Image (cartoon, rainbow, N blue to C red):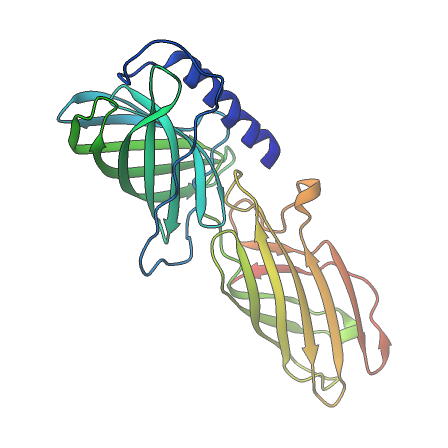
Length: 304
């Protein structure tokens, strides 16, 4: 999916480069590709809490400045805290590179002039929000509001720039967290009863590490409290529940035990989280206690 999205961005850039002519003077043409500007450095940057990657349709809205107004469009691919792609504002089109810190994006934008080469230099920033409203017809509304300024290809200043954009599809700029408290029934091989998972996660919206504890009630095998270690991963674009995780739970009680669980398989489009983010289902399981191997089962945890 990521290759398809990058291919769509590249195809759009080729079209924009071929059709856009904005005051860089001179005729002629060039076979040289447009150069993407450098993403800005953000002081005290925070881990990204949004991912602005787009499928084919991109972010769309309106923009205005002292030069006038026009449509706003943005098609980008984000990797970690960086994104690149194409942008259109107040009638100018070009290439963009940006940095994501928390839910704020900061970007540099070069127009594409009449010789299909970058000219002019603009910069801007925006705040991104995502409202997940997963129902029988999944729908996510993403919003982007920001400002920009700089110079156009003719060297004329562009000031008082503002823009808004939205992306309303099943694709979300955020993800449902795996962090939280989860409960379900415990298999008899682990003593039966109920186990409670208290999960914490670090990293950013794209992935990171999992930690926490698992307690059992009752605990007839004296497994003790289990320590959680693991990782999680999210894939963009996609619905807010598109995640996967791998966890190991180590019990160090009178009867030591280890449980290894895989949650989801995004290579098969299988997310462990339900569309509303309230249920977590395992795809693979293995484990052992002081009494031997635990038969395979697939835990189904419910968010508390």
